[in-house]
Image 1 (cartoon, rainbow, N blue to C red):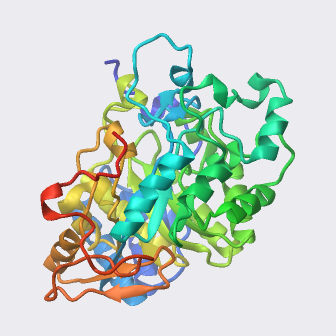
Image 2: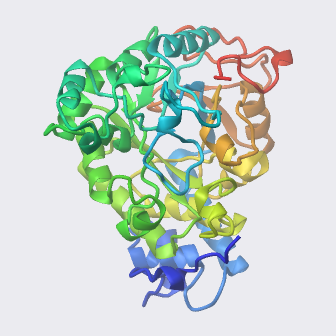
Amino acid sequence: MDAPVTDDDLAFEHRPETDQSFENALEKARDGIRLTVEDGIELLTTGTDREGIDRRRKELVLEAADQRRREVVGDEVTFVANLNNNVTTACNVGCLFCNFKDTAHTFEVDYDGPETAGFTKTPAESREIVSDAVERGIYEVCSVSGLHPAFALDDEHREILEARDPKAVNYIPPERYETDPGTYADQLEAMSVDGVHVHSMTPEEGYHARRGTDWSYEEVYRRLRDAGLDTVPGTAAEILVDEVRDVICPGKIRTGDWLEAMEAAANVGLGLTATIMYGHVENEAHRVMHLERVRRLQERVDGAITEFVPLSFVHQHTPLYEHGVVSGGASQDEDELMIAVSRLFLDNVNHVQSSWVKYGDEGGLKMLTCGADDFMGTILSEEITTRAGGEHGEFRSFADYVELITSIGRVPVERSTDYETRRVIDPDDPPFGPQLGPKADGTPLLEADVGKRSPAADD
């Protein structure tokens, strides 16, 4: 492997350099005064006046964030009964941080190369998977997929794409593929089973669903809403600074498009979440600039963002690592500080999530003492992180949640996607299962002898 590319090699314009002091930034954080980007950089670096992370200063930042968490949301730790139903791995964007995708042409009927491990599901298959999970008690289906060239928004969009130069609009007719994914509208309608909450259509997918047209993002998200979409996951954000996007995902939407799409989705009545994917080529200045853009967006959408989700970059098996651009991901110190500064900086977003998929059980619990208050969901199938080299499993039972959350003296709470419906779980009253889903009756999602692998996962 070649030597990793350094920050100096990348020659970024934005660097973690400030005229602020760590002590002043920490005092503002403790007093609840809105932080500036310079403040955030000081807290995230534990001071730009010295090299590396100062452990004593780090603990002061974590303590301030944990206190803010208590003031904002108390001692409850929430989670949701949900299913991940990723429709397809077919994609040709070529993001260098991703190993979820499979090159789209390998799914074509006349492809004559090595077999891939990827998949595409028909709308009927998606409906069957979601129906089974709803019967088990889930409340939410989360669907984030590759940008399949055959995907169109709906039948009208397909007609427009078929009349255009295919290369100009990244479109290939579905009959060229072994499996027809249908349209985005088809998939959303298929997954809208028995009142389940559909959380899907990232800004990147929204961009794909309007290509070749002059439709606004509002028009696209209005049609998606009418097809069954309830909320939009703010993934595809990565780092909302274009000089970083130029390195890790040059074929992906720009920062301005991501922000425009999110605002449009909120304007048509859809709830939002927001994310950051950190620990690759970016520096602390980029991370805090990202937080500032999310905070400003939250003001424009009148609080539509329910949660912020820091996602630590899983580097194994990704092109960034294989090509020597990075030598690893974020350290545990960086993970803890990212959670903490997110809590302190995002003073208008109530919930910060700890990802057990990214951090593992021990690390995920630690993040709940650094400012986080939400612990993801059951995730009956999780493919994206696993394909990138993640090792922390694909399913989390209610019993697991109760045991983990009570082990740190916190209160386990089942929640709905929008956090509006909540159920405190009594740890002395097993068995533990969901009760908020449209067909949930408290029965555990999986039988004890089934293990960690969901029968609904695509094999």
